[in-house]
Length: 77
Image 1 (cartoon, helix red, strand yellow):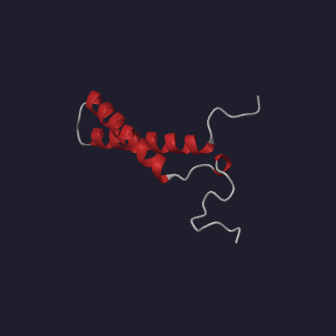
Image 2 (cartoon, one colour):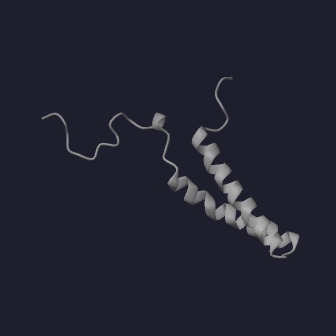
């Protein structure tokens, strides 16, 4: 079993979402909110950060075809 459970990209996207949620939860706690509200704020921030991080992080190169990034016309001449 040499394959990893998650790709590097998926791990990075999830890590960024968890960090954003933890930061918002801590900021809510420092602002004096109750524990339940801090957790809910953290989950909401993580849920909002997940699609943003998914769009920002470039897809893995392994899943793309060679030359998929070409925007010009055909090179056959």
